[in-house]
Image 1 (cartoon, one colour):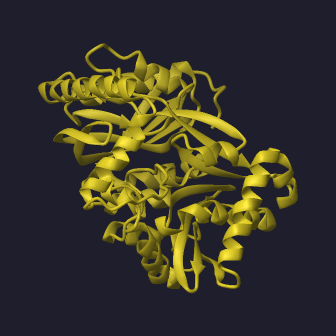
Image 2 (tube, helix red, strand yellow; image 1 turned 90 degrees about the horizontal axis):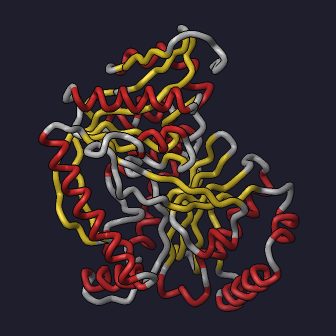
Length: 400
């Protein structure tokens, strides 16, 4: 797309699946994330329960496409939360923009035009609110949405940090790039795990369509043990997840790596290889093995494998600040997922719920500080009969 074209900006909205073929060339040239992939949109996202229709925005300058926004209308059940506690639920039609869904030029001029068009769609009653997932905090569109009219903008959108590991030319170079303490920590726990389970460890990566059942079944055997199951987050063997995994395996994206001890799965690391990036999806480990750090051991094997293959440039660990991301990452980023509310009665009601839950959430975080996450884990354990559990999970795109 040529951002230097002259002429006024115009925005066209594509509202039918058969219209998407007309933008396949610019869409395909710019998509850089699996959640904004055109085939993913058509073959998986559009088949989800709650999907109503496309709402793809094509921005042109002087008749030349410069930006494309991958969005859709969905019927959603929204949860307004204070930490992990759900304060209220509501149903609404949402204009949903997925992660990586803003393709092309991100200038202030284009962002301002997009914000006005989104507000116009809300004013026409096409949706009650917009939800833009994981915009880069310094993007022009994030700034434009933050400057929307007072009763439309989301004052409570919190930046979420994430980490990327940019892979060097070899695993040895990667290890050399880590601090001495990280290398020592990694070696210590790897040696401990291998001594404890001498000859019984196996790492298997699933990537073929016929391996779906083994990948899902063995991952579920681990995931059901983690405390995240009590919070209803992380990997779960559901029909929707199976459909997505089947799609990703057929597309050649999926790499589901599992660690086995005596043939029993004890950790998993799921990711998608897409245009040179390994995008982490879900992780988890058996809490009975926590002292031996099986998740860390498996991540090290995943990194070593990608260094050996040389088919990805970086690993994106996703949002959420966790120690392993700092230890095994090279670049930190910040993303934000703001709402934009209609000023019709339905939108104002949702704005009120968001304002109340957002204010209480911020107050709770200030009061609890670093204890907030541990409190969430304790509540999850109570929800599962007091069982002491632990595990690992990545924040992932909510529609994947």
